[in-house]
Amino acid sequence: MKNLIFTLILLITAIGCSSQSSSNEPKGEKVLLISFDGFRYDYLTKTETPNFDKLVEAGVISDGLIPIFPSKTFPNHYAIATGLYPENNGFVGNNMYDPDMDERFAIRNRDAVENPEWYQGEPIWNTVEKAGKNAGTMFWVGSEAPIQDLRPTFWKKYDESMGDSARIDSVISWMTLNNENEIDLATLYFHFVDTQGHRFGPDSDELVEAVKKADELVGYLMQRLEESDLSAITNTMIVSDHGMAAVSRKRMVVLDDIIDPEDLEMIAFSPVIMADVKDDEKIDEIYQALKVNEEHYKVYLKDEIPERYHLKNHARIPELTIVADLGYTINTQEVFDARPEYPSGGTHGFDNQEKEMHALFVAAGPDFKKGFRMKTFENVHLYELMTHLLSIEPAKTDGSLDSVSVMLN
Image 1 (cartoon, rainbow, N blue to C red):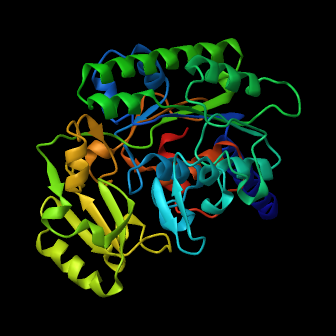
Image 2 (image 1 turned 30 degrees about the vertical axis):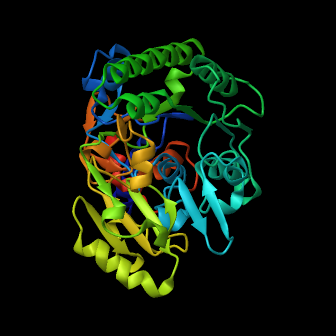
């Protein structure tokens, strides 16, 4: 009798554990990742956003999404894609120099953008394809290069002129092919919020109009998902890469007042200057001059860069990094004189702890809680979240599912 009771207890326990385990397994079949470049965490409070509101009511919104440093477009989109900090995925800025390759990277250099040597780590679309599923990327940083000699099932070369609704229609078609090429992971990218933030600033009427346009696109996207019978099986995440801060000529740091800019080999530019010193014997002299006059900026030698930036342990980091305080612009007198309207509007790239640099995160779908407000979290956790939602094995990352699992059912 005791053996029978013991067996029944084990059986009941096993059934309970199995039931608990299965309840945590993702219900959704697809993931849709959308980026509105430059959409600051608080932009939804600037105007009426009925479509975003519906999504938030049906899912999750966070108090903010913390970008990696520098809070620039290319490094952050690639950090989201790989779950890695810059020193581990190699993407340390929009502009970089690699001493081993002896080449420079710039975001408008097509040869560099399409060269897989610049991209380290494993992007989410590669993880998906390796798992036997399909990915389709509509304009995501890194997806134009054959990283690890792989490409997504569908991908597009960046074309800013492509209509916003057409981008949505293309992705929806990839998700509903009903054949072996139908995709399980889709990405979408929109640039116009960032553009207006740069031109007119984060508090402008033009920025508000861009937020309204984004809301209309979200409405159209939700309509297309519903019409295509995708809503019930798709976990949708809307993110941004960084926020935006106002800049003006009232907040300038002129390098010429401190050092001779000709002594520097400039690699990245305001608000985070990355540079080598042309004459090795002058490194200490230039550093000390910058350090003594440290006002409205911070200067670091490579080995002094704060650990929280996760930046210094890579060959692409030069000898000097100068980080302007929030809202300040640091540049040469020549640049300021040549551009009398510069700086104006808004920019980003500042310390990622600054709240103005924090980005948007909204998510909804079968595996997200409803009406849940999430605390601020780092964007490197999104890769692990996506692999979980797709039930695939992640590559090694700097993020963790545990950091964001509270938002899941």
